[in-house]
Structures are given as C-alpha cells and as structure tokens.
Length: 321
Image (cartoon, rainbow, N blue to C red; front, side, top):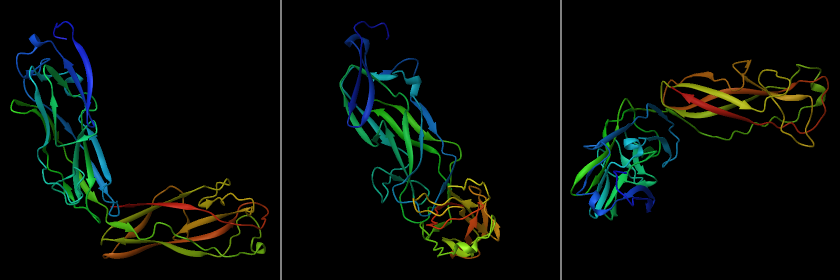
C-alpha cells in the first residue's frame, strides 16, 4: 500500500452506491492525483450487440444490462489529501425521458439509458473526507437500456460515445464509461392481441374412439396478432408432451377425474405440430390484425379409453423478423 504504515482499508456505503476507499496517513497524499500506474482518466466500454424489442413490452422494462468491469483491476487509482466531492455525471445522453426514474433518452425513440454504480443511478455527488483514495471494483459501472414508451420503439443503431464520467470536482476526470461497437435496436413488428386463448373442445362420446390413432372432431382456433406489414411470423407451441411420444400430442391435465387413453393433438396446415419447434406462419401483407390458424382434436393414444375430464394446456412463443 505505497509503503505507508498504519494503513486501514474501509468500505463505505453512501446511499446505494458502494465505494472502496483507502485511508492513508497525511504524508502519503500531497494533492488530488492518480495512483498505481495511472496517469490520466481510464475508459471502459460496454456493448449490447443486437437487441430485439417486442412492441408489447411494458414501459419501464429493462431490455438489456451491461457492465464495464473493474477499473485498473479493481485497485485504487485516484484520490486526495483534502476533503473532496466525487461526481458521477451523464455525458452523451442528458435529456431525462418521459418515464423518469433516472432513465435518459437515447437517439432511438422509446429506448432510454440508465447508468449506475453499485445500484446508485447517475447523476449524483458524494462528499469524501481526505486523505483517501478511490477504487471502482467489479462489476464497475452498470449500463441499462430501458423501454420508455408504449408501443413499438424506434429502429436503428445507438450512437457511440461517452455515457458517463466519474470525476473529482474542480480537479480532474478519473473514469469514463463509453458505448462502443455496433448496438442495433430492432423493434418487433407484432403484438399478441390475446395472451390467453380458451379452446372449447366440447363433449365427445367415448364411442367415437375406435382404437389407437382415432380422433375426435377438429376444433379450429387461432392466435390473434396485430402486426405491421411485411412481417415474417413464427410460432412455437409447447406444453406437457404425452408419454406416448406421438408428435403434437399433449397430455391431459392431471385430475382425479381425468379421462385416460387420449391426449390433445395440435395441427398447423393439416400437419401435426412438433412441440417447441418454430412454425413459419406466414408473412403479413398489410398493417393490422393477423391470425395464425390452428386445429386441436382429441387423439386416442392407448388401447382403451375411459371417460372423464379431458383438459390440457399449451403455451406459445412468437418470434418475428
């Protein structure tokens, strides 16, 4: 520790921001300066890559998070012999979003940015007593992208540059967090009009099942969407697959009064679906409603069928491009 005797390591918490400070004897620090081989402000970067944002994502959702990592390997690298004010400030994006909550507008409509250090959202100041030094350990500075408006966000590439700075007020800048690389925002062009879809299967006489592979009547249903024009739509269906392993057959929901020997089979375009596998469901022609047509029917899986409740549940996952 710079050869200074009686050195004490302390960890302080001011508000929600955690700091690593080294308190040194008075002769160890002559002024505010850099340490441990550092001679000027350090910069660390974040990158989000390609981010797909669904249109019906709620306002305030954190879309992505990235950390700069520790500065100078987590070792202290600047400090003062006198009392000082440490400031974390926003740099490139400084206009607060309509959502608020320390989220600032970016160059992409509906996508905001929030920068934090150990949970404390910037900008903010902290008063420190000297002599002391400062370290910015793991995970370093955290950057979040946040949805700030309802509906679809804009499309494009986030502008690179300095996002935030750490400085000793009236002395020097010590640390920067910057956005680098290509950070592309792709808005999803559809939203699901109804996320819970009941499919009444009706009452089916046991006599309709004549052996394994026989089936009840086809029940048509659809997944309703609202989409932009020229959107390629895919859907993947999932659920508790029947133990028979027959393609597209779901097991019935467990119940003391459940029927046996049958399952619910799902079809798309006259073919059994493969669970958990995306189905190319077409390309929208115009803006507005778009429905994915599906079929369900009871399907005999065993040699015999017993009467009872025959309910089943499936989930669906939409992807668009």
